[in-house]
Image (cartoon, rainbow, N blue to C red; front, side, top):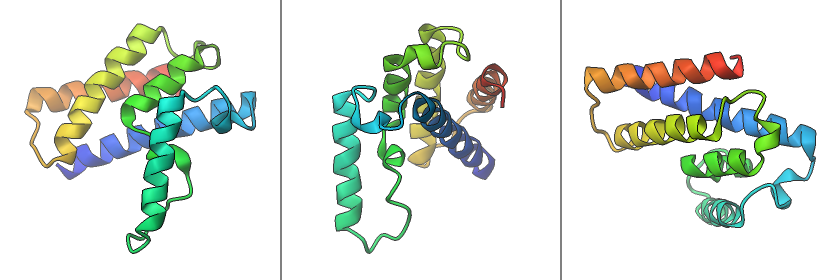
Length: 135
């Protein structure tokens, strides 16, 4: 189970890093522009404020992208498709992989076990992503 959690954590961090890198290169003020869908930005801002208000929970609360839902990451990429289309074959491919990975992520995050076949599919999708974006 710990291996699975690590795979998901690293995958999610790599998607956030890719978004941050690609959008910062295109627009240094990308977070505050129309590049981030309003709903995604509002949800992340609310979550960051909640983290600040509950500072007894130690940890990094400065990176606003860390407060974006997994599905919101997909929305940001789709909203900025020209910045990612050289890496990702299609929006359909992106949505399919990230939707499957989000389901597995949520399952694991709530302490449920995946079957060996589901674990293998998760590893396959992460491998597909890594090969596709060049990691």
